Length: 321
Ligand code: GDP
Figure 1 (cartoon, rainbow, N blue to C red):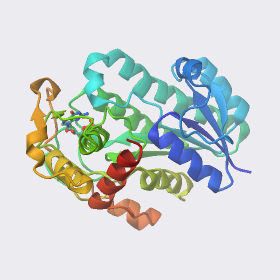
Figure 2 (cartoon, rainbow, N blue to C red):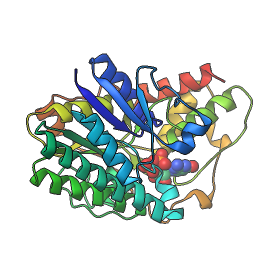
Figure 3 (cartoon, protein in one colour):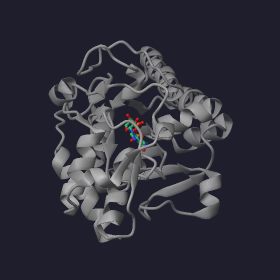
Figure 4 (tube, rainbow, N blue to C red):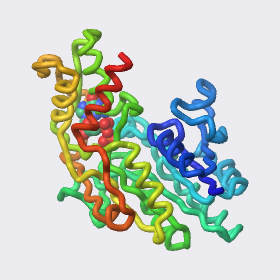
């Protein structure tokens, strides 16, 4: 039986990845942060079959010991401080978790492989934020890495670590993930903030949606499709980096308009206002990915487009409100 170690199990992607791996018959182990475990012994949406190990990714020694003990066939590093907005407030934490701990986990994987002789497949959840404010759109695996915020900078260091560990013999993959969403997305991200608030407005429990930059254009996909790409990349013959994206960008304004339409609320502009405090110091105008390589090599294609994504998220929030 294949064995996988997943970090970031309490996040949206961790839960979908665990479900995906279990369905494949993989034994799934996951690192669960002690502070989260205190409040919630099992993260939301985490299937019961997942074996949880309480530990902090930044405790390199303990994590190294866990990798040695488990000797996993696959490691998926999804743990991260995932908010770009928060990365300006806590740059040291972002560096420690998103960069240094990721590099230490790669080292542990390589050491485990060297000791046992059994290959370890390592997938790093990277981000379109490594491209910063790219001059051209769409971006692909050749686009220069030039991050413009602490989150992107830390992800870029981990991305470089993947290339380095690949040179040293690890099947190491950096999956450059564009924004990917679902009803499990926390409301600190703009999509879920929009759909949860729109549902509340439709139910007459709220009357305002306050946002930052409405003109930012993002390539939003369906999260379960993106974890599927991670698994395909882990199992590919050749380790290489992949952009994972739909190739279609929409503005935040488009998302707002589609969400209100789905909820059956007319004249949405009267509910929406902009707060300049929510506008970021630097924000890419458009992040849109070209996933041709993932399509050609991994046979990966996104299954859910923009309108359907918005509909699924709004419907879930209407159903629970
Ligand atoms: P990110 O791309 O990982 O930072 O994902 P987010 O969902 O947090 O942000 C996506 C885009 O939405 C960015 O360009 C933000 O500037 C923009 N945005 C506009 N208003 C808001 C808001 O109220 N909250 C968040 N999180 N983002 C917003």
